Image (cartoon, rainbow, N blue to C red):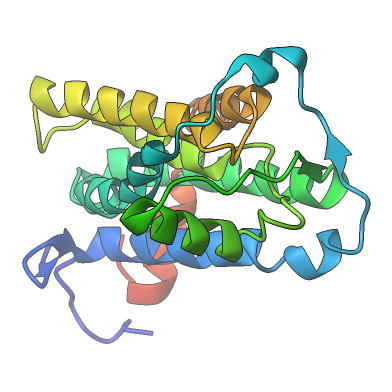
Length: 233
């Protein structure tokens, strides 16, 4: 596409993200939309499995945790921009790990869709307003689906794991990312959007994706894509 031009792939777009990190960064929300909303027309025709366990009944519904659940989107935006600013090797390896984790979600959503008892309407004012938006968007009032693995937990744990290799920020960012991941994972069950096994599998698919990416050097996918797009190594 740009093979006849010499392009500085380290040049930051809008002063934020180097050009080499832009493609994997943009692919993340695109992949999300495909996996979550692209599979819904199919899974809505399937009979979902309720894998709620007895332990889930002991977890209370605390609606103000919806604030944490929604603020997770902000932490992801910041976290993924930081990841895209890391050195090329780290950036590509972790983004591929995330892609693998999402691919597993895609397969599970299509082959083993899960559901749970719809959440009870709770809260008032702004919290209720947020809850209505989230539950309506996820169809949680009527037909909750796409629960296993939890995408919320997947994204948050992935960014924590990425923070452990961050060269952009130090130990403080690691602590922040870990606390954010724990809070987001807790919020998914406390607002009754997920059950515990959704949380566990959300974390496991991240670990598997990162393991496969590192072991088989799958970050080269983005090196190849970069070469294809820009004609440069």
